[in-house]
Length: 268
Image (tube, rainbow, N blue to C red):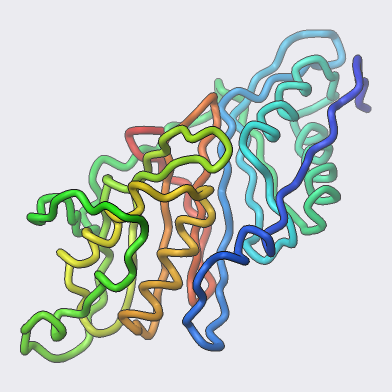
């Protein structure tokens, strides 16, 4: 049973096709897989006795959905749950999943964990990641520059063979197309293929500094450019963006099925 005390404002989804129309896709027929993992740390509602409840809500949107959400619009929607009654956490999950599934025309996953039961899992420097941020690379102006990307053999390294490694940087930043606000994130590139020049990858990441992109566009641009320029046989690109107004968005794009993991960074 759900009791609504006031009208819920409609969600205004963003067309993925429109967001992708300006992106460069030089990857041939390779299929892109993945998802957008949203965390809302401030989802509140009332139980059937008008007692306030609060939870951390995880929302997973597939990257092949026709539409996606915009952060401020999603925040307004989630805030309306505060005055609604639900008989259980499961009822809340079903309600949110149903509404967002209909809005995006794609099946979404929703899990709400009461704050008193939530366990914070935070990444404090993953030992399996190689952080790029000590590479001697300065600021890069002029927008995203995929031509900066190189494999090691392009810069004089005569080594041969395939690499399987995960490279990361905490220096990703871009501007929100709607507000102009600066978004910061941690990017990671997990690949198998010819070794990627780490200095060139960091320079490329820094070139996002003056761009205006939604979080999902940043990750998809990174994915397509690395795939096109460095030609790995397998590639997964993900980012975890800094929490804003109780929400964070964490897109993942891959050449293959990618498992859903929700390990927060220190900025989340």
